[in-house]
Image 1 (cartoon, rainbow over the protein chains, first blue to last red):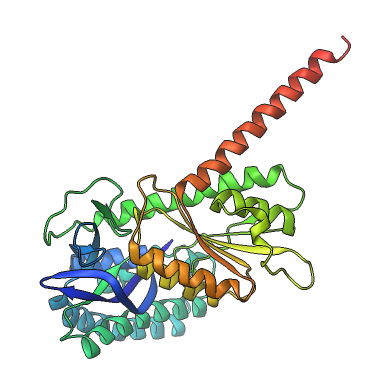
Image 2: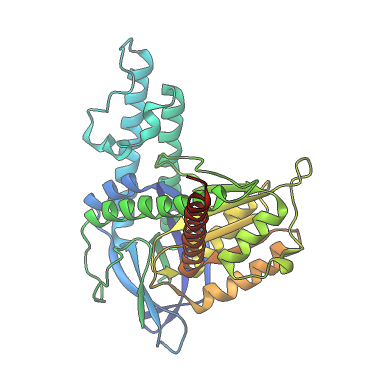
Length: 157
Length: 208
């Protein structure tokens, strides 16, 4: 089960955001358990998106707060280094149980991936790095390209 | 009028400006999504039971990214068109443009199950992107199970544009509303009742 993390550029209408004419800049599929771990540290917010300029119909979205984005990037980069060290140790260990959960609390980001029990350690490591790099990429794109664009939103689901 | 997006809980949540939401809702959403997939799988498998060619599979049970491949269906052109017609409300004869596998002549269907309340425009963008990345499939359905589903104006516009574009290459891309799944379930029940009736009729007529 995975969900998406979307970098969406909505149209602005005063202080409100409108979906008509929106653009999707990027979409990454992320395991729900991983997004849940991020939300424990950086709780997501809710806001309304209006269908159009008439501002009659709207729907509600969950998104990551703009102020949290640089903090999330830093946190993910630390996890990246920790994951490198963890996987290096795993590669060089002769333990009988290569699928042991990491002791580093930050690496709980990758717990509860059932595939870890089915795949070889290298495939599991590739999957973890792929998820982590996808996350770093989408948060970094938000920060690098859209930091001054009020319509840019990191929307969950 | 308000509807809640995928990331939230399915219940009616009061709309406030920027409240912080508890992370536990993601866990609840994961369970709701898993159950929605099983409901669809059950309905489609029961349907397949009454057909000659339909095969239903769940390609991945992990929570790793799956590119929108929750359920795959493959079968003869006739049976797939009938199934897709029932789910989408499109008359099967209007699906003549659909391509099929050059070797087997069968049609491959990719189904992405969603349990949220809103079909938003970014979801249609992502569905189209996932469809392009799955070129061996001829039908791509975003299947929604929430009975309170709303499709936004922009999502409807984008879906219409994408449908035209994909139709040109013999591919159907569409959204299945909850009524579509309900129609399959209703037909399954009717078939089961009919089968029971036939069975009991036969046993009554059998010599004692």
